[in-house]
Length: 418
Image 1 (cartoon, one colour):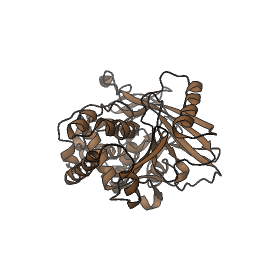
Image 2 (cartoon, rainbow, N blue to C red):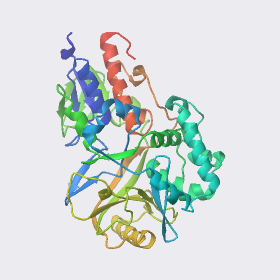
Image 3 (cartoon, one colour):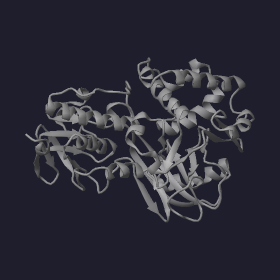
Image 4 (cartoon, one colour):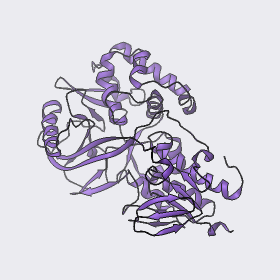
């Protein structure tokens, strides 16, 4: 059978699905992507509202991600870089802490910030050196413990953990007790140290857009919901049955495949609220942290501190909420506005939009960095992809999509690919 004659379907047009399609195309195949919604990107989307770019959740691209470097054209994305640090709102003051080795303007603010002890600054240098010497595979082979216990064992003071590590990484891990695996902490910390956090000029959705524009022979069927996946067959919600030789499930698979019905992924959720304001209280592109355990606000960012493709005349502020304390959306908006005024001296906020993201990040145990193509294979014709297979990151989404596609190619060709 010619390669073009193999019917290969991919369920989901998120990052993993788009990468899988690209790898299949590069090997002469013409896959079909079935997407339940009307757009690509999965959890990575951007809306234009009232002239502002609103990403679905506060998301950044870490430029040191190896898989991102392999598949993304950073120059074409026109990446806008964050400064390597944070502005911390504590006791009515805004204190700046950052990496002065990478940006000298952060030297004196960091030394004079009063965040943590002098010994904490030395420990940060020690941690930087330690992780620079380790490969990501070494990091993911180390014993797992909570990030909190890891930081304590490393020697960081309670103040440093409370004022910096907890609010900063709570915004990344989407949980505020630092129970996330130390493997993930070390991996993300290493990525921050070796590259930059950045956003495409036109918003985070520019990433899946770029991937989709590379596809030439792939067909995407939008607004098509799948009800079940079986060997050689896809059942659609409208009753249609599609014959398929190979199926890559690049989305939550537990409700589609009967044998996985008891393996449903648990998810971390968050709220992201956007406001228009007259002026910025953080003048440079730094993430703002609120290290107050009673606060619903975890971190803030002025998106207009970076260059954006839109040309709104005022400032755009995003607020990330990890624990909404069971408030209604209306009450949450009001609570956030009060906290912004009291803790961050941000007044005159005009609410634009709230995003509740129930499936923001998979809640996984036993995190891995890598997998072989054969590990994506569930049955003779069904393969699994998505960051849920490894760890909750864009890097993992890319790797798993690539590996699932390679597994299909191996099965067809009878040749093991590396």
